[in-house]
Image 1 (cartoon, helix red, strand yellow):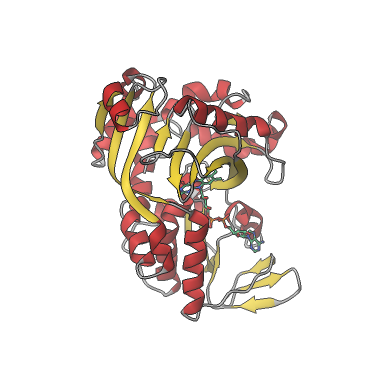
Image 2: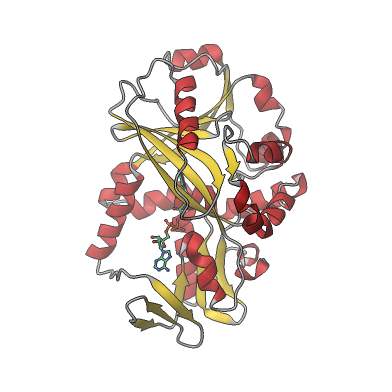
Length: 359
Ligand SMILES: Cc1cc2nc3c(=O)[nH]c(=O)nc-3n(C[C@H](O)[C@H](O)[C@H](O)COP(=O)(O)OP(=O)(O)OC[C@H]3O[C@@H](n4cnc5c(N)ncnc54)[C@H](O)[C@@H]3O)c2cc1C
């Protein structure tokens, strides 16, 4: 519900962003290209923006558990949804208490976690390293034990219901009463409504419609241990490392890091190493020699809010992207809203803040 980009980041970000040892990192030569995105991003980190942005995000997050349960029910995807707690770990209680604004805003939206100290943490999980002496526990959290299988199972269900899928790279997009897409093989498809949902690649396609959106890639890293000797009882948000450690199907996974760099730049081993370091602090006794990693792209706007709906002058192309750190979480909600728009219905939500024209 809360954007990852929050006021507490303002003080730390300038130093962090150029430090390859920090979970927020930018390749310096990328700065000139990123500036048009970065300036409004920093302006949105002010305390006065946090409340309104959280309010807008809560519209698409408040019922995400139910949205996923309802869509997956009765399909093979259902078994990948697990409901339980989320435990946020802090070095010291002060690390939690000092971020008063976050506590206040969470409270306003009805999220009041249970606070626990070192003793209870140890009782819950004796393997936990000594670096963490305080934690907050949120109930009613849902996580996926295999995001890849979950999405593949939903896709298989869609196909089994008669849904069709054509694979191809879209190289052109036109607007009009019957907008069209052209694939790199030259094939053109027309429809009364088209949805643009190309994540970090949406900008150049939107530009073809005369719509200027600001969406960039926050590159994130994933490190997973197969068949770990032990696993976490529930997901941990490890605040000092900005890494979420999640028990998965036969895996323990750590994911996090924000890197600003080109979409096609190679992944950086130094950043994978930061997640490895987080594992060592969390579980000093766990053998993590053999782990697999990947880097992925989070589509992020400068205000952390998704892009959803139609743009002025191009009403038959709908936009749906910009899910940033929670794109999988809110994807179903965005999909439902965009389906309502495509069907000519008026969704029961204020979509103005998501407008593609806001940039
Ligand atoms: C390490 C990491 C951890 C994450 N953890 C979480 C998490 O715990 N929870 C969560 O909710 N989110 C998480 N995210 C974020 C989430 O993965 C993204 O927000 C989400 O995948 C975005 O979905 P999308 O459908 O918009 O984009 P994508 O999943 O990237 O899909 C976009 C698709 O468009 C296609 N495409 C692009 N251009 C074209 C073109 N020209 N023609 C045809 N096709 C095109 C691409 O090939 C791709 O298949 C994480 C991300 C990372 C990197």
